Length: 143
Image (cartoon, rainbow, N blue to C red; front, side):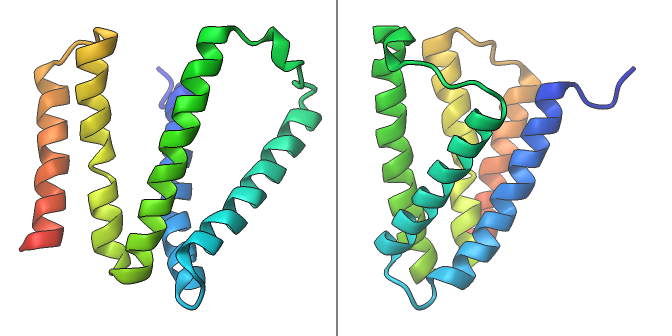
């Protein structure tokens, strides 16, 4: 049996890079307006994504993307932008350990939304894991 499937590898890499992002971002946002910091980071992300699309020959005309996908991608982009703006403002004001902990409550929100709107199963393991994430955030932030 493999230790990690492909999605698990990328999910773990995402978690690592998110942690690194919080640390490096906190260092960068100390003397920079948080909105300007978000803009700089966004430009870098766009450039990286363009390079990956070019390297993998995955560019396509936007007309090839279905209207429903456009709607959800635009809404996701708005949510991402709002999340980043709020995250980096919080990071400029608070300690990285507490801000990052509260931010990871996004896992619990994602689980709830997945169950309510995508029909995903809420197993006892998923519920317990979400509960532990919530408990961990409360423990780190408030106690």
